[in-house]
Length: 216
Image (tube, rainbow, N blue to C red; front, side, top):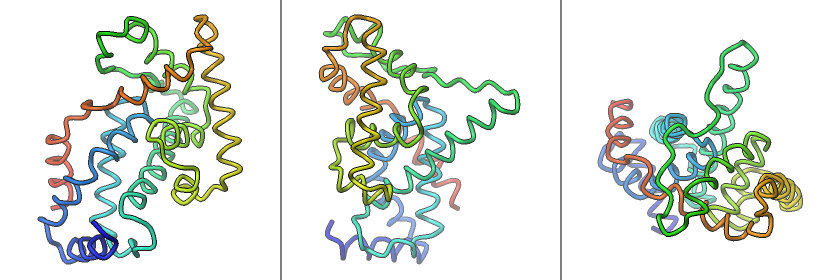
């Protein structure tokens, strides 16, 4: 869609057009749910973030002014709601609750790669606990979704120079975890594996039904 079509779509959503909302989800649910899972590392939290993003789009369509693409606007909301949910996790720790920070329903790793089937995803979960919320978001957007630093800057409001610094820190922390397994030199291969991990994970039809039920 071009920018004019995107503005029209959001205008129709603002008029209560459910077909327009379904079209929005058909087009963008995959990248929002995949990105949120890579940030949150938990299916339940990922589904909650994805629901928050699309409910926000339904409730406040006028906030989309067409200055950026609709995909980037939705990823901006993904950034916002993911960070809020990560903060909620920290608060739960402060008040004595123990949320599971690791993946509880890890997807199947590619069967042709024995190394990743046993260690890689769990290793990323452990490494991610040591990353700041910003590092987790930026690693997801820039390294896993492969957005440019410029796009990431537009989405997050962080300067390109600061993003590069934060990504460097995230890379150092992840390589430190890899070093425990003698795999520090396989960082590029490891990132390539992580890029595949969230594909097909979320039950999107079920999530669409949940979102539609919540906005009616």
